[in-house]
Length: 246
Image (tube, rainbow, N blue to C red; front, side):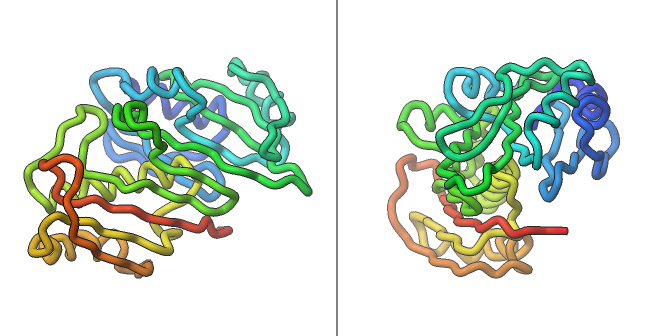
């Protein structure tokens, strides 16, 4: 997630929320561990544009699982964190509450209720395409995460490189971000589909794909077909199954 004050964001998540700083690279990049997931904080000059988009719909930036939502909410309130939405039970079988971080990102905390079926959750990247077309970057259904076909657009600036290899790298960064929001990682990917207008471009992408997925080796399909925007040279779609980790 983007932050204009990395030090303050780290303090918020470690001191007030009680999470663990996994790593910090100089003064512009950090990783915070929340259970089995690690999400990233990146220093930027301007406020994250996805905050406004998320505020307009039933979306969130992070969904954090907890064993006891009521106790977690009480702890956060004692630490001076204001609840945007108090503890409540949902139609999809969870007990949840909502807070915002120091930058305005929306964080859901959820406890699975025994004997209830958990239906779907929607993940947003803040891309304008999601609102215009009517879809989500990813959908979480139980332990399954379905990530939509993802392109090489930088969703912060809505720009895209001319290079197929740079687009591939950005595709995977976008997918990685969506998976993190769903409590998953690239290690959980079980299936991937690559879509390219030009078959001849695919071999250029292999070293990048191998770097991100070489240890995972998911089931994969590559198809060649025209894409919605002539600037897009590759689109990647993945399905992941969240695994329990110690």
